[in-house]
Length: 90
Image (tube, rainbow, N blue to C red):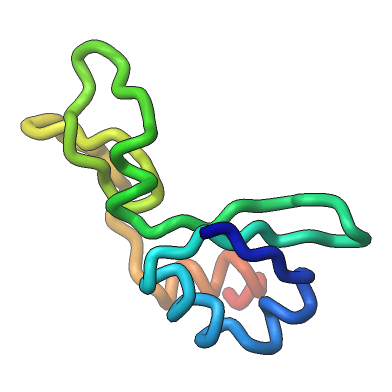
């Protein structure tokens, strides 16, 4: 069953609306009486998304693809160095 709620109501009563979704309802969030989002249970959402060829079939958090065995190069930097750069503390 689809339920409709205004964005302000969803923001004020977020836990209530999450319980509705967990109970199997789809919630259409509106702003100024125009739909702006749909909230579905995670399993339902994953089943309805098309999977591109070569992509994992299990959805990752945020719907981002997961690649295993790839190295990600990141600089080694401390939080103190970040703060120095952000606030020009040298």
